[in-house]
Amino acid sequence: MELGVYGLSAKAVLGPAETARLARRAEELGYRSWWVGDHVVLPSPRVPESPMAPTDPILDPLVHLSYVAALTERMELGTGILILPQRNPLVLAKQVASLDVLSGGRVLLGVAPGYLEGELAALGVRLSERAGRTDEYLAAMRQLWTAAEPEFHGRYADFAGVDAHPRPVRPGGPRVVVGGHSPAAYRRAVRSGHGWIGVGGSPADLAGHLEGLRKAAAEVARPAGLGRLEITFLQVDPVEVDAPSALRYAESGVDRLLVYPLPLEDAAAVEEFLERHAGLLRHLGG
Image (cartoon, rainbow, N blue to C red; front, side, top):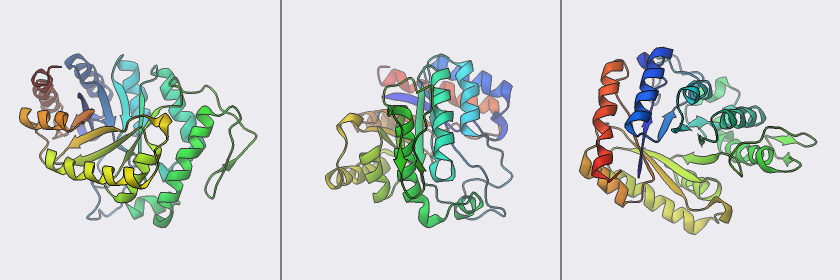
């Protein structure tokens, strides 16, 4: 099991100096991946389901990851997650391929349909369309990344007679990680993702998600080209991960355990958190 870090594109740690110091330090400490979230806009005033206040700063994930790519050499660069239906799939395919080329094939594209109605509506997406757009956009982007003559005809994306280069570094395009905790999300991960990403507070929470993924695997076919479904899990509430929990995650089959170095208002505390949790690798034999 690898360790990754999540969330350092917001609040007090989003500046260039803080990002440079923390990204380089994380790589030195042995973290294998760096993940960030996505909100183009946030409901104002804040609604109960919103994870952030409308005045909380958060960087665009692909711009942020491009900066981190230039500062690091080995860490994979993940969106956890990018809200797919509110992005133009052709533009996004070009952006992701560009980042993959410049980073040497380190992109992990985490996607989900989103859930904040105000944010989706402001970007021209109806809540009822989010699942359909997510599925179509994934298929459309894969055409642009892999097909000799890209072509896609759907309700929300429709193109032919075009091409886009450079292609991503990884054969088949960047690894796609599907987020979400609903039966539909589990099915989408099995059907369309190289992996699944979820959130919870304990190994017991993860067990429930794994059961949902097992049920989904019995309901939908998984293309052989996607390989084994990788599991990425972010522990929150509490954010502190102890050694016994880390061992349980590893034994459950987690490929990447992500830690969330709160509070983001204190860059020094974030660095201390990263140093403290890097010790989990010793307990796992890493």
